[in-house]
Image (tube, rainbow, N blue to C red; front, side, top):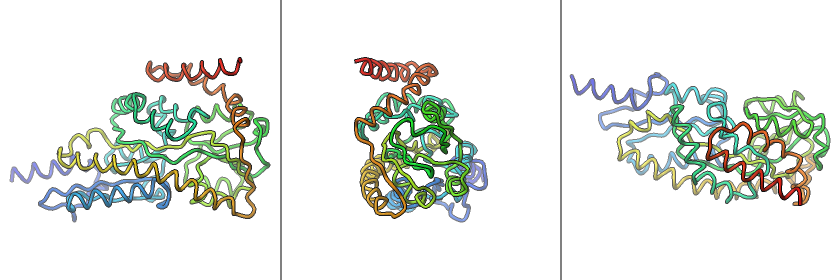
Length: 345
């Protein structure tokens, strides 16, 4: 009887306190661990495909002792709900956009700074280096643990009013954004307004004209058919969209070491695979977008991108003034000073 009590306690510890996180029909005598992975994008996006690959690897290598249940397209929780659901133990893995973590850890806004990164290699050096580790430490203080950073590429602009080619073309337009003060400052700096909306509300908001436009990656624009609601797209590569793969710290540390090592190794492999996949999908689906009738696309030149970067520079100044973490503040101050000196030349 005592061993049964210990076993039941272990189930509760591993799967959280909520009944929604426990599938009793599948918990047997061989310590089966069930992990619910909730995300908000489509199954064929880089994140959706990576979640499925993670499931396949883990279930195969664990000989069925670990089951990963994947819930895409906000079918379980919306992006407004998933962080709280993870904290409550109702799910065990999520992969929110970096912006959506900023209410907990404002330093995550770093990833939203316009034209901070020139390419994906720049992103991965930050994500996998001391800055990424510092962000993980800050998340752990909030009860979360960052297991990986997945990629979705650079953001483009769409709108339904007119082409956006120069900074002055932003004036008086409204854009949907994720919950990010940096993104709000970005649009404010060029005379636009912004509105925070959940991803699953975006299509309807564009369709009904609640906002004029939005910023997103090629894969999200294509997979969610946002182009059906928008006439104009600017290939700007102005911002980055990545995802923090998060779990609950207490849950992760309670997993037996052998199983935890298997999960961590699977995440390393899937992360490398996902980042390469994101690049491939971006190229393929951008070609598909260019072929769509009724969508007018303008590609910024390198000189035009520099003009946009300078127009957005108040965003850097604001972020540098708000950041308290010494490691991240030092990094941003260096970037800001380099940019300022280059403008003065």
